Image 1 (cartoon, rainbow, N blue to C red):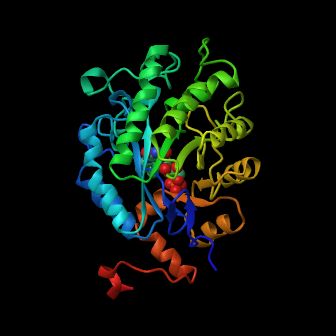
Image 2 (tube, rainbow, N blue to C red):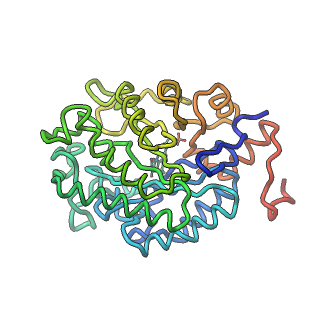
Image 3 (cartoon, rainbow, N blue to C red):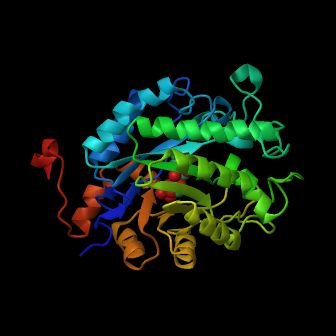
Length: 353
Ligand SMILES: Cc1cc2nc3c(=O)[nH]c(=O)nc-3n(C[C@H](O)[C@H](O)[C@H](O)COP(=O)(O)O)c2cc1C
């Protein structure tokens, strides 16, 4: 009996298996609106058998985009534009999810295939906003330090983005608290040098991210799952670490977070990442056992037996795959075959099974 292909229920939502499509920016939106690319790209992965298809980091405010062509949900019209995407994903038996994000000081950059560097004002760029006026790296712009009234606005932007997401038909909302973007910038002492009640002590650094969790939770019916993606460590001495992630996750569990997706890093360019197959899985295992909360494992998970082993040994409740699902949108159908699991194919494709 495969554990990877056993269903998982969180709240009233049942995932047909534990293979999740990790959120992946496509740099293919127009003024924040998703395009045909998104319907086909995300739709293919739902057809391919994933349990959940998560829409890319979707900005809650225009300044929160990583690049000008990132997805956004800062208007009702954008929310409506996601409706056919959520409907198609659900129609294929996958759960539609959306990651809500603000890029903080890492905003206003070019698409990766154009080099990914910072964009100036006359190249469709803008001044990024962050907890502290510290640029990400040399050559990156000085971010504007957010004021307390601006934090009130941001909290409201996350709240409204969650409301629009649920109205569009998404059944899972994920708060992006990882990868050196705004909420992670509040958490990490490397990026948060504030001297007010939002910086300094652990309690102060988690204050704004927890405000966002509360606001988004208030918007979501209690039976719909709320996920958080966390960078569990900064990979640098003096940075955010596993101990703090455990303490924060305990608090988020009390506030009604249902699953923590355990990523790591990308707050500062000096980090030292020991990448290798499944290298982040121990973080998921540690949080899961310390906090007793469902977790997701991510990072260089590519092989069906490896994914099965992660779930079967209790190191995670789900696996999130990114690049392997770009190589093969039908990976879940192929993994089922490799593991000897009978998984229904879409009727339209049955003659190829
Ligand atoms: C093209 C691309 C876009 C990505 N965009 C996002 C994103 O929007 N949000 C996010 O949390 N992670 C993003 N990531 C990170 C992935 O979700 C994932 O955590 C990472 O690629 C490691 O998983 P993998 O080894 O299976 O690729 C992106 C990765 C890729 C390759």
